[in-house]
Image 1 (cartoon, helix red, strand yellow):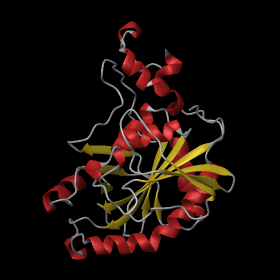
Image 2 (cartoon, rainbow, N blue to C red; image 1 turned 180 degrees about the horizontal axis):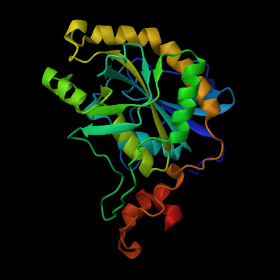
Image 3 (cartoon, rainbow, N blue to C red; image 1 turned 135 degrees about the vertical axis):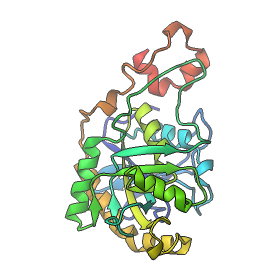
Image 4 (cartoon, rainbow, N blue to C red; image 1 turned 90 degrees about the horizontal axis):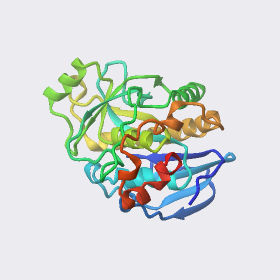
Length: 289
């Protein structure tokens, strides 16, 4: 399946965002990948003239733990459907006083605290090292920040996202540790998506919605899942409005380094790449071989 030459935007919906309102010509599409099944069928449609591909990260009905997510299949499936740019929506805990529940954050950095997750398409006889110093696409960040401002959303244009394993929330000691690192928010999903999107040469940005103060702020009380869902339900429509406007600001033709991140990343001698690996990853590496 060849990638479309049109702008195709992927939306990964997290806790509280399981669908996109306003989609026209809606249809579901199941995708097979060399890495197994994605979280669910992709929902395709048109939003104000832009082709969108939506995936509920945890599956319909929220069936999958963060650790159980098949991140590789989810991102590979997006690539297979021609997606060039992804907005990943996520609920997070705030680690800063100024980021109140209901605020949005567009993180520009990540810290990895996960331990059990495949985070690369490579291996199996093929080594690649992509640059990841700046893990999100600056062009997409600008678009989302602009859209949030125009929609009147309380938004923070940057911040460090700590990605933890879960499914338990932080201990108080961990929460204070992450604050001492200067981190802004904490979540359980976005780092692997960002790494794999970079390997797939897909532009990536996170739209994080703060639902609580984690557990460092004892005056605010500890994290309660019912409160998390209440905040998300109150902010779901605002998030959708921000997304709807942001995709209109995404560039039609990409000039960022995300689009060529694999160009100099493949280090294995070409004749040594196993046939199966070459075949499985042809969608990603074929143009460089």
